[in-house]
Structure formats: C-alpha cells, structure tokens
Image: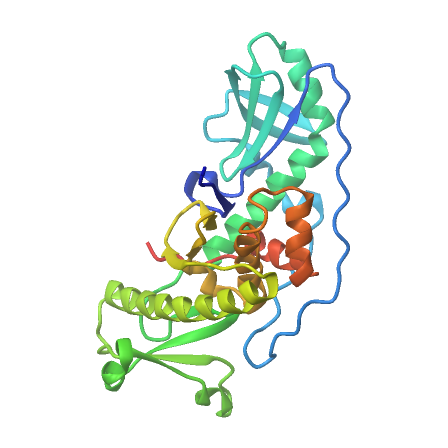
Length: 322
C-alpha cells in the first residue's frame, strides 16, 4: 500500500505568505473561483476564547508605501496604478508567466522565450492583484514588528486568542512545569488579562523567560490538541493513531494515511476556533488525502464557517521566539 501525507502550509521564513498567479502567454485568463459564503460558526465558550481580530482594509494609496514596493534584489521596474514597483525577473523553464508576491516583494518567473513586452503586459493586467498583495505583505510586516516580545516581567503573549501577561514569581517554581496560569487575577479591578506566573527570579535573563513561557505553551498545546483531535475524529468518523508537536517554519500541520497527525505548537496562540480548523483540516485528510471539492465538503461538514478561521492563520501576527 502506498502511504500518503497531506499538509497545511503556514507562513515561515522566506516563504512567508508567498502567493502566485500564473498566466499562460497568449491564453485566456481563468476566472477567479467564488468564495464560500459565511455560515454560523460552531459554538465556542466565550469564557475560553476571544473572536479573531478583524483587520479593516486600508485605502490602497495609504496601505502602500512607494519606498517599500521595491524588491531588495530588483533588476526591473514598472509603473502600476501610479506606483513604481521594482521586481526580480527570473528566466526559468516553465510554460507560463508566474507572479510571486512574498515578504521581500514581487518576483516574476517567465519562460526564456517570452519577450519583455509580453511580461510587462501581464504585469499591468494583474496590477491591481499585485498591488493588493504587496499591501497585504506590508500590513503583515507591521503586525509582525508590533508582535515582538521583550521577554521579562510584564511581557505579553497570546494564548487561545487572549493576551497573557507574564509575571515573574519564584513561588510558582513548585507548580508543574514551573509556571501556572492565574485566571482569577482578571477579576481584580483594572486587570483585563490572564496572568502567567513563571517560577523565575525578577532578574532572570530574557532567554530564560522566553524558554519558560515556550515550555508552558507547548505543554498546553499538547493537552488542547489531543482534546480537539478526539472531538473532531469522532465527528468525522476517523481514527488518528498518534499526535506529534511540530516547530516547522512552513507548515501548520500534516496528516499521514497511517493516522499520524502533526500539529505546530504555535497554533496555541490562536483562538480555539482557528485551532479547530487546523485539527479538522488534518483529520479530514484521513478521509480525503487531497484538497479537492470532496475534501472541503468534509471540512465544511463539521466547520461550516471554516473560511473565517482560515483567514486568521494568515492575518494574525505571532510573537517571535527566536
């Protein structure tokens, strides 16, 4: 029997949110498929999870800074909708022209036999799409910058869609794993967040605080992921055999035909509804080891509003643990 594995890609290092549209030179352009209509989400206890944040779109002229539209290795430039876009042109062995928008900017992959005039015509045709994606990349970069953490007493970190404030408290050293979540503090006047009491001295080094928080998050991730796997495996009528935590830079999760599931521990930063989407996504692969229409019907059977959680994976910024 051939063993197969399917996976859900997530943003990582150089491949962060890269998106590509390919044009066949001289061919008709394909229509954009319709999106799935929103439907009521499965109920999630309000006390456990906060809704994913909504990021309102900025006007294009404000979202795009002309200085940031130039790829650092740009060797060509073109005017699109009043913006000067510097891009990298790579001649490759392929049949179509591919436009890739990544964290650094625009890269164009084109066959060696396609002329510059046709490449620029394709760029202008896809100009609105390219500018939109460049704007999204800039917005994500700003959110990633804002998510940087100064590891120490008072550091803030997302957990299940809520903000957790780190409190260095040597008394917490006796707790399992050397850290404990203090949910009762939120009932105090002026306290709006959960407190994570970490059993370290107040003069602990930043890397000590970071490692302690990461260890606690990973333990919570395993507990929560196992709960959600059991829940959604029953709803989908599938059987998973093993759960492994991943620290991958390019994937949120993967599923093997044997029933082995891998989930990225960083998912624990997201609201429970987003975790459920990734769990259901991977478990659905145990019925459909592909991303065809029948696969998405399986996901939709347990998560009618999965598109909302899918967007959160792209839009939410995660704290840096480097």
